[in-house]
Image (cartoon, rainbow, N blue to C red; front, side):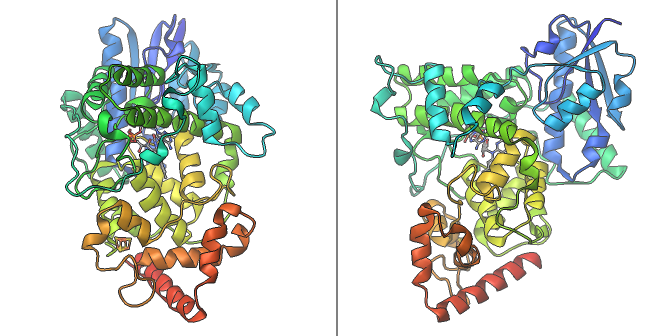
Length: 493
Ligand SMILES: Cc1cc2nc3c(=O)[nH]c(=O)nc-3n(C[C@H](O)[C@H](O)[C@H](O)COP(=O)(O)OP(=O)(O)OC[C@H]3O[C@@H](n4cnc5c(N)ncnc54)[C@H](O)[C@@H]3O)c2cc1C
Ligand code: SF4
């Protein structure tokens, strides 16, 4: 039989080491896995479309391909395939399962930072910070350095210049969109058939919006470099109604499928800066996302391994309201607009994920496993390695502060500064008591009061707790009333 390369859905790149010397390539579409959760239609479409396009590309290269569709289970499909080899998947449980089935696992080359090096760096440290890690990555890969080996422009971090609230009338050029083909039509037909056969999904089955082949990934990257990267930095935290992408890259899908090499991406971003086409604040801001946040998140996922799944540092107990799955509607403009975006596309940009979706779940006290499941199911770019640290750590602070020294908790003040959501909302972001009090504002104070003891020794929370102490008992009663009403309203929406 010779050697068979098992290629998983997140390993579709040309430099997957399992492909070297393989006699054939095996791609398995497991309906068993699809049935485990209630995935967004767009997410299922992306994964199937990417795998099928890749299979067609392999065939065009003259390689023997075994494609298994509608596999009820994964294991039986491995039988009779000779010696199986696969690039090690990021999920340790999944890797152990493949190893126990006799699949030879090869070290992953999907990330720039080596897992062992990351673990050695993180082990024994009282606190690991992304900033420290990121500076090391800039030096290791020679990115945005000046002639002395220091940071280009004299500063490692240009975040302070990159937090502009949305300017009036701010718009961005449309982002690249793929043209669907026969493969997509097949995927859509097959998903319809699976749904008729009981598969549970949620979200719109709109046209595919993200790159799923190497050629499409290149087109999406070129479009971003020319049209949106120059303005990426200053507006990266802004939320503009009707601008679902703004200046973001929409490259997480092809990056996570293995179709783009992260080092190539950031080197091309640096080249744009060196050619004078992009300001430093945008180049640095973007490079930080890819070699800083993306690699740090993956390193932390592997470092803490399965601990993420049992984290509940804030003892959160609230079930996730069904409104997150598009069932019913809430009158919180910020949350409803963002849920609508996710429902329609399976995408939201970083600040919407963190400061609207994550923040609402944090303030509500949503159970970590339910929060994690929702994010896993709902986003086109979801993967275990990226979800756990982002949701459990950054989004809802359930990891006891391992990822972030303080929770990303915010009320209406933040939302009205950084977004346009509050303008059309029936609530007043400045009010924390009364009929038109902003639910987020009241819940922010209620959250602090509920977790007061837990944050007492955290110097980064000192100012927030001091402000909490200034609230009169009468106001606090009013705040708790608004917060309870808001929480109950969301559950019953
Ligand atoms: C609660 C929450 C859930 C998230 N879930 C996912 C997810 O399922 N999949 C995913 O890829 N990213 C996730 N992120 C990170 C980030 O929001 C997305 O990578 C980004 O929004 C993707 O859109 P973009 O390509 O337009 O990104 P841009 O804003 O243009 O950023 C460029 C690239 O940087 C990388 N990046 C930036 N921030 C992060 C980060 N915190 N973690 C990992 N990579 C990062 C991504 O590869 C992204 O494509 C999550 C963040 C939060 C707070
Ligand atoms: S007023 Fe409050 S609920 Fe309404 S959009 Fe603003 S932050 Fe959201």
